[in-house]
Image 1 (cartoon, helix red, strand yellow):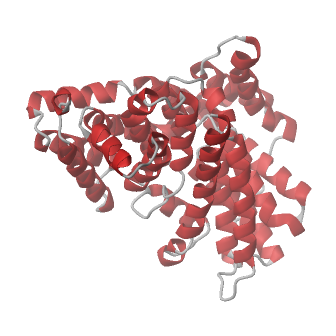
Image 2: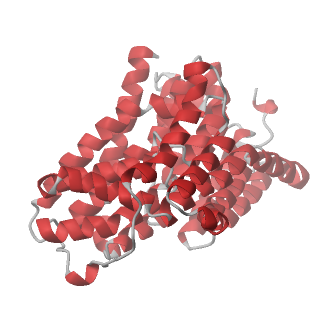
Image 3: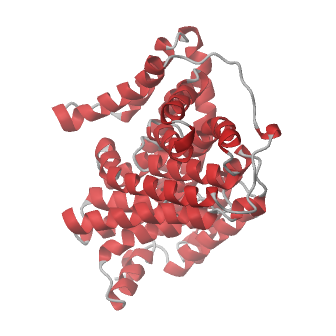
Length: 422
């Protein structure tokens, strides 16, 4: 049975470890993954030609996801540059009031991420509002940042973001269906976020928000209805398939929502510049996915799947455990929800499907699992979110266990739902 695989498990694992080490020492993640794939393939016994061909094949399998992600930049650019994302966040916080500030901040970040803004940008967008509210309500930075990160994690698993797109592509499931599948896990994650952030709010020796942390802005924001119109259009277009049997691909729905957002907020003349801004925000993820595809190709063509199933069987563990576990491990290895979900889904989709795990449930469990330890220090999310509230690396490190609890909550709920309803 081993003979059907082009590479050994050892080679694939060594390649992944090399990629991780290179990422940790600050080599660009895309190059780290490509080099790791090359070395892993050679060590795994594939030979130079087979290794390169497999890497190219793996990268090619990412192209449909990359195209969708690139067009999603139009929506992301529109929401950020028109002020729509900030307006949505401000409205939620204002309506809920200062007394429910922690919940309001978490919900605001969840909504911003859920409508199509990347999780790190969602945190950065909400951060100035959170800091201003935190100053008034005397909430420490730890509580504010955890509320934003946890809310972002909850929103991420129900969003048309790169990780969701990559997971849906790997399993061949409808993007909208995958988004809806994790709504209940996302709600549980939000509740846990609010509880943990509230606990941190009462912690002694915490980091207080200072005047220098707060940025004042006089920029004019759009009204709430124009601000929310673009995301609503995306949701309606994507929902047409399950509701009316009309299939509108995210490649179309996401940019249409962005254009609607720009038109209704009075930014018709800025369509080109805002779209270019959005592209600049997604180009890094797109390049990362190409690099991810190379190592995913090597891992997928190795004996790793076979060996992992053997280990699970020896431990008397059911095959579905592979879904959340692979999401957790791969996201932790790459410190990226997108890369982790992609590698796990690309590698183990055939195995999970052959073991009888429904595609939608498997994709949902992998996706949720990819949010558990995706914010480790060798990834950009860790530093971007810490920088959004002017937090030191050592203080930012202390939040990782709390973030993991949020991601683990959504993962466990996703697994329970699979066990109950399939």
